[in-house]
Image (tube, rainbow, N blue to C red; front, side, top):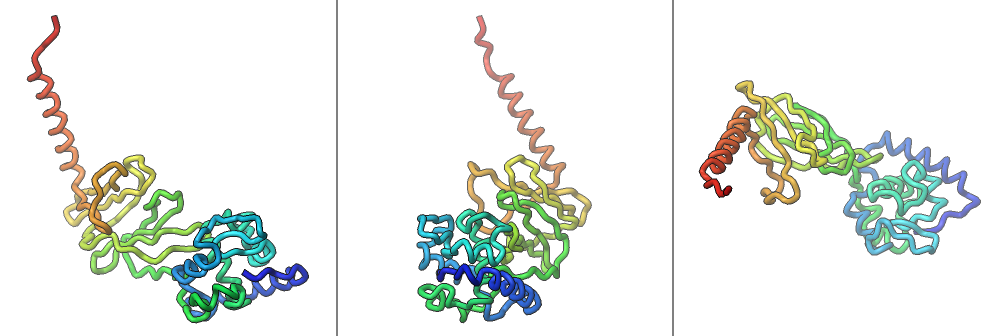
Length: 253
């Protein structure tokens, strides 16, 4: 990335603030935006895709910000140095730089990798045309994510990006015919589980599998079981365990 002239630092800060205001009004799809995949191509060119790189050459992170540019465009709200911020946070600052300086801010890696031609917003806004909306930490990164069901009964999740909105939606399952969906960590694995009511008034839950469990089909949730059936199953397993103990011979003496 091209180094910022120190004499223009205050001018850049003011320009960056104005550009952020214009971008917020203009919304997604402007020429000063690029998708996450495009930014990742630029990062691959700039730093071999290493978002935490610091080689001591005065440029930091996946997109090789110099510290003056990082500070001028508001990077301090995320981290003192660019390489200490997350990928999404670095992309957020890069969007502001792109709005002011254009692809030439990355003279060797910008335009050739799609900056200026890719106009897709990296973090599109979520249109809540959904029901049963709730929040919870789906992926265990300590950032809240958003769950919602559409009119067709498809359940989606938008993973939260700290300080940078939400990622694109991901479909979890179809046929989610439940209401009043809530999310919380019921099994203590650090990831949100779902609880919902069905049309018959049963309270159902869906626990995320733990890491050592057998993997499920990608993108699909297990069909939740009514809580009363789960209790019956636990009671049945307990009785079977007691019965096995009773059948074991007494070897004492």
